[in-house]
Amino acid sequence: MARTLIVTRHAPIVAWLSARGISGEMIASLDDTTLLSLKSGDRVIGPLPFRLAASLVEKGVVYEAIDLELDASGRGRELSVEEMDAAGARLVQYVVRRVDHIDLPDELTVDRQSIQKARHSKNRGAKFPTAALAILLLTIVVLSQSWLFQTLWDTFQPAILNSQPPDPGSPTLSFWGRLLAAARSDQGIRLLIQGGGAFVLLATVAWIVYRLRGRILYATFGIRPVDPRRVLITTVSFPPKDALLEEATRLPLEILGASRSQIERLKKRLEAGDARFGDSTRASLQSQILTVEKLRFGFPWQQPVRAARAHLPVLQHILVIVSKETAGAYDQFTGFLRGRLDAAGFQHVSIMRMRGDVDIEDHDQILASLKAAIELARSKWGVKEEDIVIDCTPGSKVFSIAAAIATINRAVTVAYVNNDGQVATYDGSIALMDIDT
Image 1 (cartoon, rainbow, N blue to C red):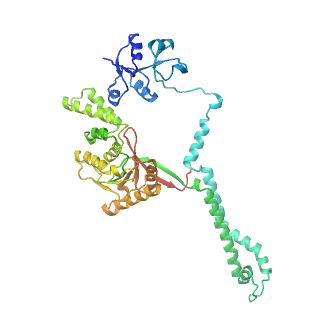
Image 2 (image 1 turned 135 degrees about the vertical axis):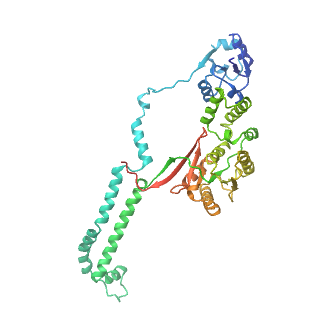
């Protein structure tokens, strides 16, 4: 039977609805348990945040709110039923529509083709003409060095030979005079001209490379399959509420570490009455699913669990980088992670804390700690770089940036767990040219 929930603290609103034949359960707010228990066809009346209201409507819940036309004197206070009627109170039902196209005024129209071209150019560096021009220019300069030296020789040799420097023993002999005196022989003059020409050539090439550095070199992060690794490097995020941690502790690794799509497939099998699940197993799984959905947005420690689960049973070691701000939660975090691994039969996976707590916002400290963790794994356990993965999901955004930089042009990969619980692995590199073919 469909439920009707009236989200309000004001009795006149309930009386106003009752006068129109609408009754239901009056609640002050929607908690997580109530939200998860709502099904398609249920009815919710009351003011809700936009995103929450939209999620309910997408779920099939009928969402309505009371619309009023109030002046300044009627705002900020409780209205009587008569005042609500006088303000033209009415129930408005909200729906979610997918809009494929929106007509905008000319002033707000966006040239999406130009944006895509600019975005592609920024992300991928130089196009073929620019790269080819740079290569052609450098080739011409290098191949023409003999011609350049010969031209310099023919141009400046007469002037240098006609220069009569002071007597080398004269106390007034300048630097240039001594230099010209030493270059009187053909060999000295040639070395002088060639040295000057080489300096000009190198300075020109260095200037060209510097000016085109953003186009000649470009960084890329390509997604790759999740290959199980032996060592996982992660960090500790801020601890969750004790009540959520207590509920998460009762969940097995398979459920807590599952992605949203895996949970949805399991729910469909349970709802379809899969004969492989007995009544007690079905009830237990349904309860666990309800808990994991409740923890989806309020329990940050589930992401490291998912990252570790993606590399089992190959995973052997977990290195934890601790920040000064979250050092107090390390024992609680590792105890929680240890419990999930042990309960799933992975007692062999070790968990180790890196020495020296870092500043959560200091990129250099975090990057140094990540590099130290990589070297520790190689020296202590004899693993190769391709056996190491860094989980950049927990911690601050600075940690994620440092984790990405630490893997550039190395066999170490970086993993990220999105909000749906899916693990993606990226391979960072810096290439010499970006030439579209």
